[in-house]
Figure 1: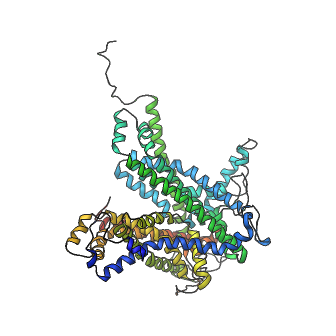
Figure 2: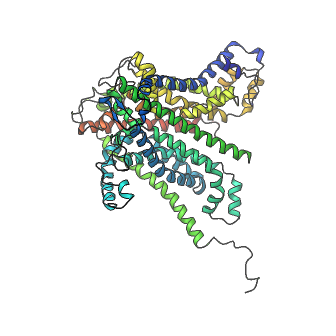
Figure 3: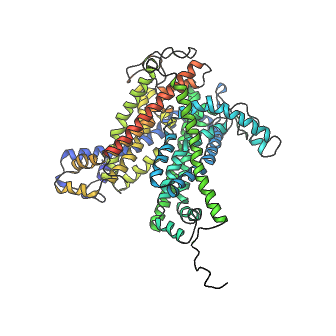
Length: 326
Length: 296
């Protein structure tokens, strides 16, 4: 097994190993087991790509580029995914716009403002948002939050009536389930991860930079802008991208509150659809070409989230390395 | 005005606009926390208020799960509670040992080698794979050949947990100081022995607590279960074959029902699910507090 050979403890990093020629069998078996478990991650990722695209291949081959049309009608076997891609992008964008300012501000609050013994309970509370399961956000969203938002949407809509730009964006809603409701719920769900990643980034700012800024007479805000922010930009971009990946893949809450209507519209208060939601809602009754199309949507989602994650991790690692080098 | 009266350096608090801006910024940061508290409080309050009245011993253990039109108070979610516990437990049995072994590989054997770096990086990437994709994956690779079962659901949950367990365990192994390892090697122990009897026990508190948090997250997952376990209304004790059910999928099915009985059962199930996650989280905190030897 080549993996075991590569990981030969004759040359482990940082720690001393036992003499290689005296290793008993059990020791080797354990190493192979451990290596196999590590490699399992790569195997699973490869299997996900292979098995799902195999199931979806008939959609990709018969539909061709028409997968990027808006026409989604299982009755006529036409499966254009564009309205779902649009919905995924719109709801994730709303979630990011709402969540990032709050998450970054909270991360700054935790690292730069409150004393350490207060930071811990605040982190616990923020992490509770992540403990609430997706389906519970969806249940609350559709039965409690959306009807409440509907009133607010209505008053906003009557406020912006006739105003260019705003009217097409925030026009009259039909119900509380919409792109915007979905975006808000997604924002709640990604806030803990964006906060904790940003906090890790801010925590790497050298104390000497901050003290230098204070010594020059800077206020806390000036210190953050002059010392913390330039140092953390790259890392925060990575954190935001990871949040974006989460928002795009979040399924069950979206499936319940997005309104289940495959349309492309500028109306943010209109009912829409996104990729994970349509898979969750329609897979049960699907077979044949329909099922292939839904699994194909999953493949698209997999590729997009993997790309976003690769870029995000790359950005984070690069900024971390640049800082170490500096 | 002479030079003597003017201080060379102004050591007072920054005055005026600069100070005001700073105060505004601080206020906004505190407000951001309040903004987060509101939805959290709102959702927890609603779930407790609406769920508490639905929950009873019969609700948690009784059955079968009644049809949607049946009013609250008849039947029970016992089948779903059983399904959630058994499927999540089975997933943990698969993902936790493999995840800890993977972490041992990455930290103890791989080190800075290329393969370990790739595994570490791809574990991070794998945590970002949407849970619904895991469901489709297990559907394609398992359900199409062997049918719906609790086991299939457990596979999907295990795929979600594996990278999380690897990364959290690795962080804990990293904290174990090298002199501990070196001292054991000096006594003539083999690498596997050092890892299993010295390194692992030293890090076990953090590893267990990380695993419990991963289990808590998995217990609430719905999307991976939708296409792997299907749904039944009576307890299916055999987790290895036949359709099963779970609290999360029941909530998903009931949430869009107009019937008050179905909605009430959804709220009760939601409270049960959150309670399970909270209990696991509290146990994780206790484990961390009691058994952590090395922390950052």
